[in-house]
Image (tube, rainbow, N blue to C red):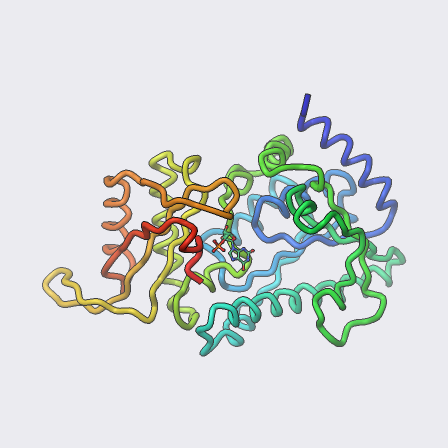
Length: 326
Ligand code: XMP
């Protein structure tokens, strides 16, 4: 029978055998897979591991604290946070095309990560133990999808960023390669990770950057972050986390509509709620969230979030609509 404790014990042994005395780095995204794979490797080798978390300024409310405080408290992992919001937002200025946003965010993420890598490699060389390994939260479905390959990743050619030393080659550690998502969650719980991380719904790497239709600015991110936090809190309070696959909250930053609030006319932005039910994100249906929950979310968002005077519900399945708006 499948048992989380046994899998953890086996993986710890395998990781120790693979790594020896070498040093290891891992990129945390705030998501389940990277959180669990990093925690497993930390169980196995302790401070030979350094975890890196890039704050690109496109995170949800409380997400950074969740990683820096709760995740570190429950694992004891050595964490480096990179403050890269200014850099990301600088490159995103004036950009409205969704694919261009994705490209910029992906590229800057890798640049930020590589900068830390170079520092750590230099430090490791000074100390005599090379960094040879990179942790990846690859799951079984990812292995199947990509045809089963992998083993080593050449960060340079892979991500095509120039100017890196030739020897920045890493061997991969992929302790979740044989596992499905629900098994990964079980292992995370067994390792004592915070439920807010282990039970987290899927969230795109480009973060809130692809949930603002229009240019991404700091002010718009603040608006969306508040609206998203309210929707999440109310859905959780209503006990709907298990029936909703994920619920993107989208700011239509280039749309305005007329409203009335207090005794004045408003001309603000709409927020879209996109709750979906799905097995694998390939197809999805819109979730029939109870009206009273929707009413609470709408009231709170329009009352508490500046510049938002309307909340609309997306009732489109996938296909034809994708889950995200961009
Ligand atoms: P779509 O919008 O294509 O989303 O129906 C399917 C699933 O993928 C997530 N998603 C992304 N994840 N980088 C990611 O890491 C991306 O650029 C990206 N775009 C979409 C989305 O949240 C959903 O779970």
